[in-house]
Length: 225
Ligand SMILES: Cc1cc2nc3c(=O)[nH]c(=O)nc-3n(C[C@H](O)[C@H](O)[C@H](O)COP(=O)(O)O)c2cc1C
Image (cartoon, rainbow, N blue to C red; front, side, top):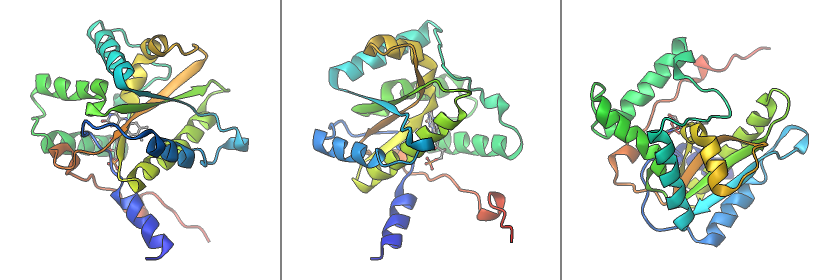
């Protein structure tokens, strides 16, 4: 198989995994994935990612703390995020994504209680046995650094897929930045952009069986000559 075909397959196989098998990932495999992610490009090679991998009992304690913060309405995001800011086609795509996921797991749009419960699965890392929390230094308006973290995150996600693993990026974890810093003893100067729950996908879970549409090239790319 050619390298481009291999790459194409990995890219197309990757999808957000929202249910995981209970077995942890062996440390050497985790390290191999993180070594791949470390190769990501960044502005001036600054490599601004500060990755915290949380596993085992610490992960359970972290989930408890985040759920408690959520119950108390203690939301402390470092960066704003409001889905009502999405407009036009972006709003439509976001709606399609939410609809497709809830349909896959059998939750009706109007069932607010079940939707809330499903959304809280984010705070249990969807049953994953590891989370990578992507912290960053605050630099200027942070846009360039956030772009670098995006490069890193996708490299990590593709490497997970290539290793037979899966992950889901989660802005939602960023809503509990202060709680997470306190639990892990992280300095307030490190800002939490998002987390990635990761592990062995439960491929039989309905939430892992749907695939969301991607826009055709013409909606995203303009060629100039
Ligand atoms: C930066 C970022 C943050 C995300 N945050 C969440 C999240 O908080 N919860 C969630 O379930 N999915 C989250 N997602 C996953 C997206 O919903 C998903 O990537 C998108 O629907 C496309 O699906 P795919 O990843 O399967 O291609 C996030 C994705 C990205 C890139």
